[in-house]
Length: 289
Ligand code: SF4
Image 1 (cartoon, rainbow, N blue to C red):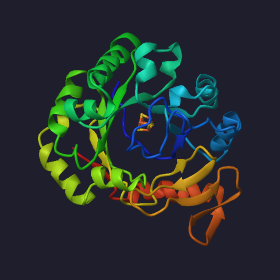
Image 2: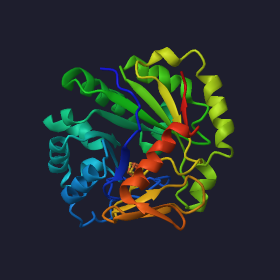
Image 3: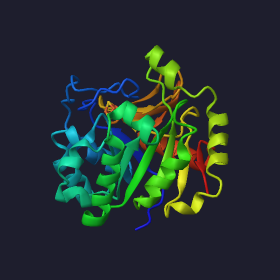
Image 4: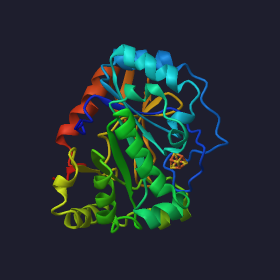
């Protein structure tokens, strides 16, 4: 089934910074030695419903490493909130649980086409992700999308990638501009010197490719701020920055009052409405149709 890219009333929930991997470029500096947070995710999910969140996009860390994930997904499904998950695919490649059907769709992470991706994620991982997508689609009837990190290395590598994922039955691709993780040497290697110029190059490269994927292709330009809400593993709602600037902290998800910008406190519900509304005004979400 074709899925759209709606980010309206969506919160990206970085459940935990624990991950089975420790990629140097990880935007959340996740890794195997980071402990899972101790908060109650079921209470947080209910708070999100109260705040009128209609869709949760789980990320991390690696969501499938989070011990309460299966129970949480079940709980959120019962609350009637749509769910999608971005994953490195390692656990799913070993075993695909029956509750995978609870997701509106599953996004697999890519960092370039085969040679760049495998250099970063290990030899054979690119094909492992494609084969996982094939199983999710054909044996489990799951809609699969790709998240592609647009970095200085990968920006010119997109055509081969789109051809590969189109052949494997992916629904869509979301290109995401590299987000600084403030490890200076890493950022120097991966950061886009000019995100807007990179996006223009991407547009040129993919001219004529729009109809390859039923759900289309988009770019999220994270160098532009304040249009995307992230709930971090510490229970804070933040407006992340993909530059060297610090993320803006709106407040805790349980707070009655949040800030949409410094010194502008409003009720929590209005704060989220304000950010969601910006989604329609921003030019940070670019349709590559
Ligand atoms: S697999 Fe993803 S979440 Fe895990 S360390 Fe790498 S980039 Fe971060």
